[in-house]
Image (cartoon, rainbow, N blue to C red; front, side, top):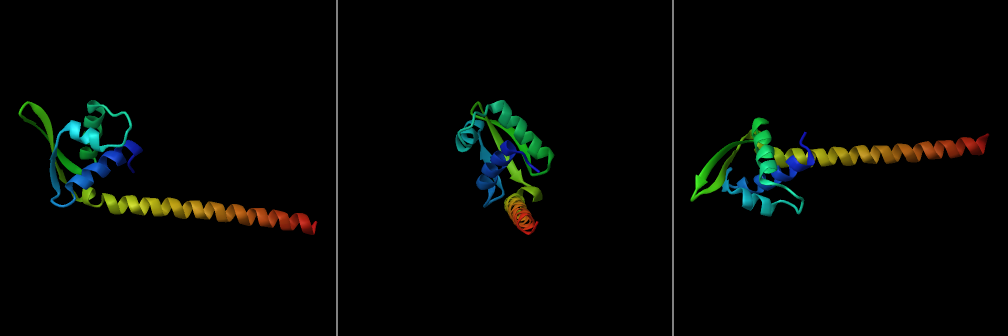
Length: 117
């Protein structure tokens, strides 16, 4: 399960690599596509390397005209990211609904027992 920062970075990488499964991006471009949180290039590099270790994609660093570039090619886990994130949201929603329903039932049973006794 990915944490919030990893999920945000993986969402951007997935949207960039969605059609061809591979993309070329600089750290500055990646930072501009991320939400307005404060990320540094070192944090981005650490998150990308952690995602690569988890086999979401293959990460290669290269230089283009003196600027650092990342070559990212999605693996099976990377292609399944969107489906897994939707499934996780559904599971969380279902658990929340169960918690609310059980709280309502507990309240009603307590209220009913007070009325009876």
